[in-house]
Image 1: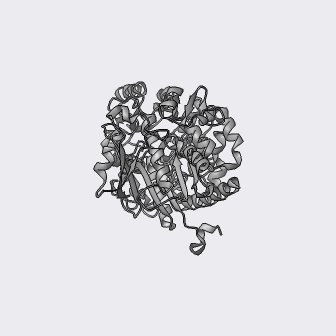
Image 2 (image 1 turned 90 degrees about the horizontal axis):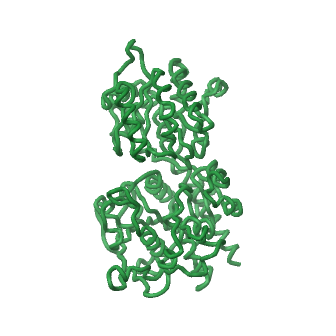
Image 3 (image 1 turned 60 degrees about the horizontal axis):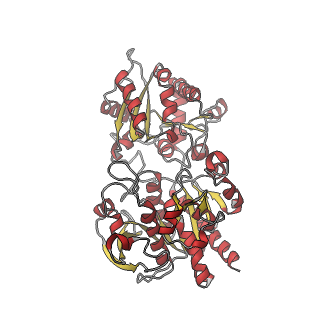
Length: 523
């Protein structure tokens, strides 16, 4: 039995969990879901965890109760320094730390309130969809505040044993802690863990921006932050963190290849002994077809026939026929995704005509690349009885798509972990996925062998050639016609358990290892 399974032996840590997103306060993708679930699971394991995010206006609006608990002055010289803020407002300012709770939990959330976050739009993009021109400063500030809190340099009367950063927006934290080691007793510095949610976004900025942030010049070298004459936030997390992990075991291996390493595969190979992969979990209460208030009719394995009522509700929402012209049942494929190249939307478009010759319907919810959106719209206009599209994001509709679809399309070119395939399994909606990242780690292909052994849970295709996606959909349509086989697939899928508690236990072990590694390095 692992140490985390024994309450009396469970280590208790003070954890500062830092993220640029936190559901339900702010979310653009899976990072928000992870940040909203993992801290709650760690809290259930008796950890003293605090979550730190920027105080975006949208986050403040969604906080039921919130209060100021501390202020942090920005030093006048040297990074973390004033980072050029004085040139904006004419004086050296301070940030305010606001405190609230993560809904449905006792997890404290600290929000960094400062003028640089007080604007409309999303966490990374403005209202027009353009990247904020000062994202380097916005997230450097978050990193600086994280270090000040973690080191106990605030009036919060709290310090961290572990600082857990997530993705490039928090990549400078470990680098700043490295600088703190040079100034202070190394044993007083918290250990650091850095989670890679997506290597494709590395927070790359110019040397002039490096200088404007007043980062210590010693960090400008190819062993540390410098990256092809620029510098990378992500690289800071990979170089300096005591432990690095990816959001699935397969993705941890993939990012050590040139295809998925984005120029940092060599560094990740070098740090292989400190690199691991932990699968994301899902909120088993929020995503529960037996209790989900957002779907048309609740169901479980015992009442699996009720799933059909959700299918009818979904078809009616998208104004799709309930049956084929010959009155036979029709396979309904759902898709909830960012409509971008990474998600394999182009693969679907390239084979759309052939796929629509099969007895299928497709219901899509998402937004992204304007050209991909336009092409999907054209198909929905041409074949309105088979494919429909809703642009944007709708939380309630996303739940209905998971519950009402027969199968779920997820043909991602790469997928660090993926959550929708986990939701689909939970709802007995058979995932159609590519053999990559967390998709490969969570779905068991419906081969003849796995069907015979009654272990199959989904459909997997391998290469990104568009014909492979067609073959996968064609296989799905064939299996769907055999109602006994299909029901077994649904039941197998719904039996799968991907709870955050299990993942949290692995993170707790990771924290223990990070502390040990840090101590070993400090001697």
